[in-house]
Amino acid sequence: RDTTSDPPVKLFAAEGLGKLGRTDGVPVLINMLRGPRTEYHDMICSALDKLTDKHVGGSARVWLQWWNKGGKANFSVQSQTLVHGNTP
Image 1 (cartoon, helix red, strand yellow):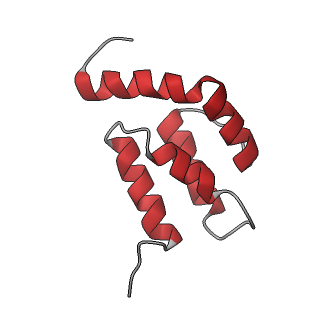
Image 2 (image 1 turned 45 degrees about the horizontal axis):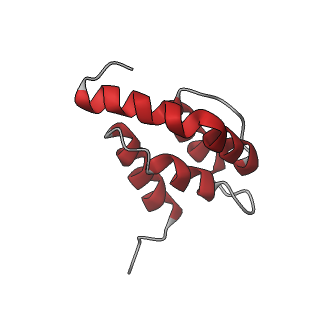
C-alpha cells in the first residue's frame, strides 16, 4: 500500500523538513489545512506553530497570507541561521 498521500505521512515529512531548516514543510502543512477539517487539523496547526514560532490560528487562508506577506522570508533567514550558523 502506498502511504505517501496519507495525512500522517505528509505531516511527519513536513515536520522533518522543518527540523532540517527547510522551508518546504511550511507550505505543505498550510496546504493540508485546506478543505474540510480533519482529525489531523490540530496536529497540523501545532506543527506550523512550532516550525514558524508563530500562532496565527487554524485557517489555511490566514496562514497563507502570513507566509506570502513575509513569513517565508523570515523563516528562510531563520533556517539559514540554524543550518549554516549565519547571523540574520
